[in-house]
Amino acid sequence: MRHSLIALVIILGIFIVTTSCKITEGVEKGKAENVTKLSEGDSLSASGKKAAKVMRRLSKAVGSNDWDKMDMWLQELKHGLGFNCVKLYMIENHSVPDEFSELSNKFNSAINKLILCAKKQDVENTDHEFHNIVKSCDACHASYNKDAERLNFSAKGSN
Image (cartoon, rainbow, N blue to C red; front, top):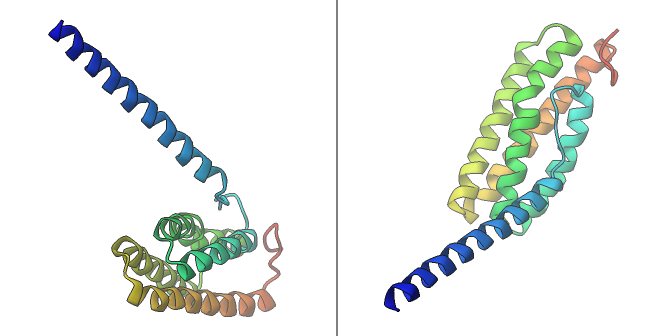
């Protein structure tokens, strides 16, 4: 009888663990459906527009100190635009000015610093590091707009 009770408790425990894992998987899947994808096939302009949406979402997360959403949107920026902007620029222009590469590095560095703040839940430095990301975005936009006057950038690339 005692062995039967132990076996029943073990089976019940396995059932509870299995059920709770399925619930967690569903929650994570739901989160992923709301993510705006920044794909490598996009133009730099299109990726920038998608990144702007992510930045607005990141701004709300920073404002409310929502560390999980902050991390999610930062990863989206980093793996979407952060890693791809120089490649997308090169596809459209067939070369990359040193200034643009430097600005890309500053953007990625700012993202990495804010990721660390989010992981540490560092309220004191979060706003400062978010401001650095915004400054790097503004600097890049100025450089891109300067090049856009010189080159014919469109959603499908340069002529």
